[in-house]
Image 1: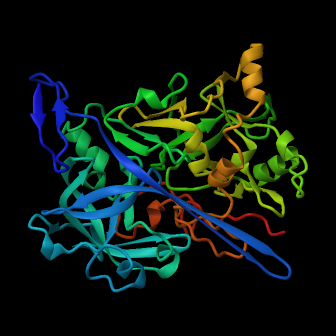
Image 2 (image 1 turned 120 degrees about the vertical axis):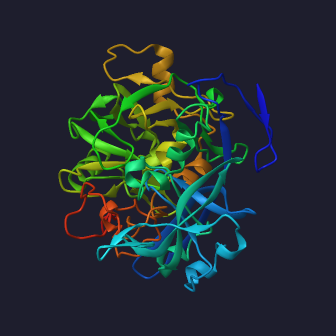
Image 3 (image 1 turned 30 degrees about the vertical axis):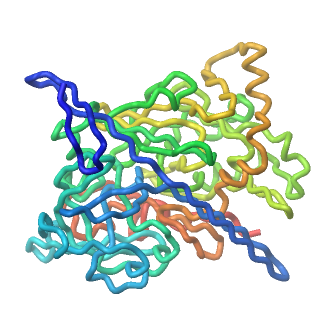
Length: 465
């Protein structure tokens, strides 16, 4: 047994043997949740914006410079504002100072005009970042490794000026990063710094719980059901799995067979192909006056042979004026699409585990304080016990209107730059990083939106009313 004192000062206990055994630890990074609600009204319309983000700390350099970042499974690189950046979005946040770190050094991003270059540009649906590639000591939860990252030299005002966090820590598959040296998980895993080559995410909307991302292990106390694994599909670099079908109150609807979904901690919404979302709006039958809100069905997605269901509070925006289905339109042509996005509302209900070496994602019902968890139902089950049926049919009293407000994804700030939260294009969000928009990336990625360069989630929006 070995005791080490990492950067945070917390004692980690590392257990291992000589040889090929993994010598590492599991560490947890606490995440803060921020929600800002803004309502405006006019003579002909009203608008409610709910901006939601979960972010935690990362340090860069020697001595450490602290940043608050979104731990984002939909992008591949660590991006923080740099001291050279004079953009308003940079000046509003902490900025990395190269001359303040004794371990920082410039790094090659890729090739430009046939020559090695340390400059890069990443475009998103509603914004862009220009920057330079660096390498330095990166620490998360007390674990440190030398990793490449992007120091932003210019950031578009929209949407970055709206964010309280400083940057983004990419946790996608390493193939979406500029190279494996930019992937923090790849670096930690290759150095055997973590107990297992996985990370897990627990998100809560409750004030008495701490949301967190755990590197190197699974926190069983956050699970209220079995953990089941689902193989990844596609080669886009996203944590993407297959949807077998969609259910309403457990009944198959045959509206989405062999669809795919990306599990994304950096998007505060649920999104899907326009044709399927339109069918779902019709099938759900949400009345504008909210008269049938308490009788709406559970919306389920069959993944890995289990029904992962969402309550009305997850897919309906409910205000004092009206109710509206808050599923967003997202159209990606083949071979990249059609595809759904499971964002924060889904991740508040389900505990997720990400395992790149074995190309799989794990799901379990999340265990939240003071709430009775729902039963995880197998899609092929023909009989359900009376107790399970009761649990499936009735929401607990603790999941009242306050939680519905916190979890509702409509017009949230998408912590991804390419999903619009308003039909007029005025989104505040951060959409999934587009691989082909990284101009200096020397490798060929799957193109997800042909010719537009506008990103993975391009101009998705609630329909105009």
